[in-house]
Image 1 (cartoon, rainbow, N blue to C red):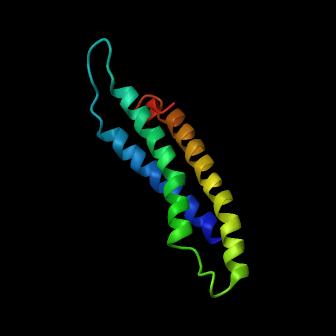
Image 2 (cartoon, one colour):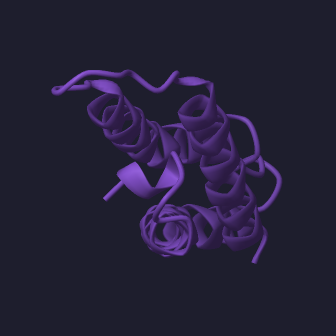
Length: 111
């Protein structure tokens, strides 16, 4: 259960970081601005970093010690990839919803 909660927290934190980066990117004038592309690229970079960071932190920092109780360790390591995938899907879904809610703002450029 802990892995799923951590995965949700990671997804929310990465969405917050993506929103902060998107709002930090300045609007560009002219007929061919590149700022929407920069926001989209940063959103997808963080989409890739989210599951990697979640899995690495869960596997190497938060995992229970295998020496203490092998059953708990095995259950945790079996749930970790599923929780990582859930966090990735949650990140994409939250990003899509936020980009549709704030269509006229900087976040609207994610999709």
